Image (cartoon, rainbow, N blue to C red):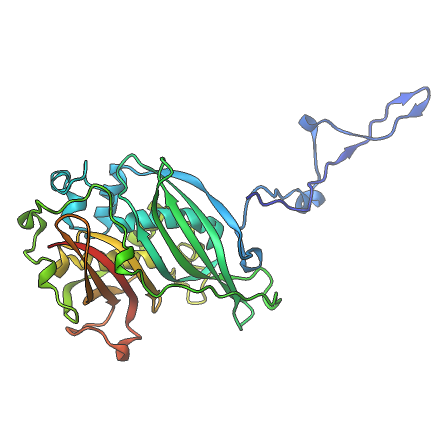
Length: 386
């Protein structure tokens, strides 16, 4: 969608003192290649070509937005992603391991695909965001490989003004597709967006109904994936589907301290231009907010220790950024097994996992009493060999 301004740049008129039959002709506008303006015209000459992004007032339920620009994912992207996050899952690290699992080569890591699609939507949805609040109904429908080109489309499914009069919440359903028109990931997210005119109310509220979880029988089945000849030694841990019991908790042991430069490089990798992640003047405390997806990827990477065989994410039931994250925060992660389910993928089963990322230094699974330290609460399904 093109942003158009009602203000047209003025064109200075030059009086041409050309007498014809003894009379001056009327002043004529000069030709485009000879246009001039004076300093007093400067405010009117500001171009309307740049786009400040949408504010809360610009959204309406049912609006469908095609996001520019297509993004071809490369092995260079994968290498940089693996350098920024401690990803170690074998399926995304080794072409040989991936081929043994029925794929032509190692795919792009699941949440990296999500970040690319999310990043496409930011200029149209959340470039003026206060914060991204949560996710739901996310399904990873097929693998993405180096050379694939991703595009994104969003539909506005809900809006609600905040009582402070300064912002509102916008719900969108976003779909990412490859160059063949096949959906690779789709999800619902909700974001707090600044108002263009604080205090002015629209009175429009529509909060969408969102499914609390993706049911086991509705989980996607990535085409081609086959764990019948799974290599546990190369994967790094011996634990299979039957070794995980509902209610079991796992301390992933390690922590990662978020660095200012690393989080900005990663966010730029996803082509996510949300101002709050880069401009330190937007917050009263002068700090840049860490992109919430950065914390998701850190938590997923840390979960390797204890969930090394949870090779791919099938769906995200819900995700909530409990508290903001800033540079200097050390992120730690814990997981709890919520549910086990069968899968039609050969040699595989599904686990429903709840992973909490927190800055707390504790050996136990974080509880509500430690909510001030909690950063992320993620409920999701993974595929694991049986």
